[in-house]
Amino acid sequence: MKHKFYGGVHPAEHKDATEHKPIAPLANAPAQVVIPMNMHIGAPCKPIVAKGDQVKIGQLIGETTGLGAPIHASVSGKVVAVEPRPAATGFPVMSVVIENDFQNEVSPDCKKRDNVDALTPQEIVDIIRDAGITGMGGAGFPTHVKIGSAIGKADTIIVNGAECEPYITSDHRLMLEHGEKIIQGVRFIMKALSLNNAFIGVEDNKMDAVTHLKGLVGEKNDITVEALHTCYPQGAEKQLIQRITGREVPPGKLPADVGCCVFNVATVSAVYDAVVSGMPLVQRIVTVTGGAIKNPVNLLAPLGTSFEHLVEEAGGFSEPANRVISGGPMMGVAQYDLSVTLGKATNCVLCLSKKEMPATSERHVCIRCARCVNVCPMHLLPLYMNMYSKKSEWREAETLRLMDCMECGCCQYICPGRIPLVQQFRTAKFEVRQLAAKK
Ligand code: SF4
Ligand code: SF4
Image (cartoon, rainbow, N blue to C red; front, side, top):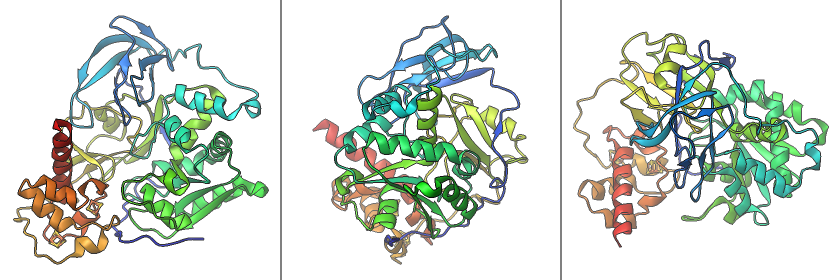
């Protein structure tokens, strides 16, 4: 049964440039990859290789130091630096730089498994942990930790194929071209959680994917593929849970607290690769698109490939990009340096043209129209959160549940004053965390 969630918006989709384009391998492999040690939520990994080391694809190069997921080499070659490099998060991050030898040598640790049906639930979780799998839809939460904390608590698995952000089509193509990996990957997760069924939620602007996945589930009927009426931010965890199960995750609580566990389709596909082929998470599909891109594409690229290289693979710029974003236009992060690289959660490199992203000279005045309140899916009061944040009254903003803001951008999208609300909330959340740390 499908339910409603509060708020949301309907931005123009802009998916037509890439939704029918098959996933393409890179025409030219990158000569160098820069692999940041923090492609996940939690503590950065500790590099375990040094300058001069030879590495192979799938070889462990970063160990966890707490909450996190290990990191592996995405190309074979020589480590030429272990040092902080610019990252898409906006801060320099300790990174392992590998010069590609173009030999594509695979680590002997990556072994194909024949009898996957004999694996125990714990063995599946261990494989997912060792393969460094994290949420690939944006958040980057370590998947083995999510599964571990949901064992015995979750009664419902939800797989997120909503891909509700405009422009992005990487998950859509994955569902169409590798749907069998998703279905089998979901079954591995069902086994890990000792559950017998799961849902896959897909927005109804991708009915071809819905039909395809339903066909792959077949008569086994253990996985329900739901077509969901398109509405942003349906792909957000809490909204998807509410849409599919009717359960509302209370503020400050987690999906497991309402018996749910949510995984992105790309994450599930990576689980399949790890279990069956023994290959850790070393590559991903990324949509390179936007009005400033000559030939928008969906690419399969090694982690650590620079945005600059990805743009070249898409034919380069047709005009100077007015803004480059890692992710979609609603939740993505603006980039100022194209040497930043593809991470585990980078689903899109969006290069907006002048027409798509006109410069504004408005004064960003709030006229108290309350439209932001009407669309906030978290039931927040963005106008007041903004008012207190602008005055640096962080405590007051926090009292208004600022920390529950998931930065979905609905308020900013609808705001007639074009107030950069999300940026304001990111700054305010940073300040609140600083105050908490000082305490
Ligand atoms: S939508 Fe914009 S202008 Fe309207 S109340 Fe919210 S912040 Fe103010
Ligand atoms: S960005 Fe935050 S405040 Fe704005 S609509 Fe989304 S959750 Fe609400």
